[in-house]
View (cartoon, rainbow over the protein chains, first blue to last red):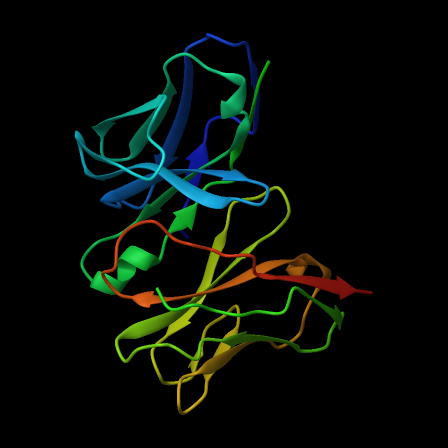
Amino acid sequence: DVKVTQSSRYLVKRTGEKVFLECVQDMDHENMFWYRQDPGLGLRLIYFSYDVKMKEKGDIPEGYSVSREKKERFSLILESASTNQTSMYLCASSPVGLALAKNIQYFGAGTRLSVL
Amino acid sequence: DAKTTQPTSMDCAEGRAANLPCNHSTISGNEYVYWYRQIHSQGPQYIIHGLKNNETNEMASLIITEDRKSSTLILPHATLRDTAVYYCIVRVANSGYALNFGKGTSLLVTP
């Protein structure tokens, strides 16, 4: 089974702090994603990466950056946390090869971040 | 992505089959139907996908009508752990990376 592991289930940070959310997958997937999920807004893509050191902005990249130094690990960084970044953050990965596999994404359990 | 319509909520008795419908009347010939679910406070989970033939895996069956304008996800013997929000997504295979889940159907499995 594919396993996508997010380092924390719950996190509480203060405004202005630099926050790191870590995600590791064990299936050698090329693609990795960071979403945030908010009530009434659904899932929104922040960033994705299709290879080591490669990244592309999603729909809402402002206030975030990412790092992918190794294939299995994709980190989301909140440069200076703000209260409007309080949310559920979800990491996902997917394989390449078959084009339709881009739509088969495997998600971690999520990190619920509260910024006070 | 083609628009999908799902009921807001459904109930199912434990042990019975749960049949979750999805209407996608504007689906085009190269769009696939994907189903995901999200159990409360967990990440979404991929269930199954299909193009035009019925599909079955260890989790569920997917029945797609001949005109492809609607589909049904079947959980053959629902358990309490199947209580979740179920999302039907219709899109072409290489349409991009962000999944748009919509509102889905909230399935409650009762004892």
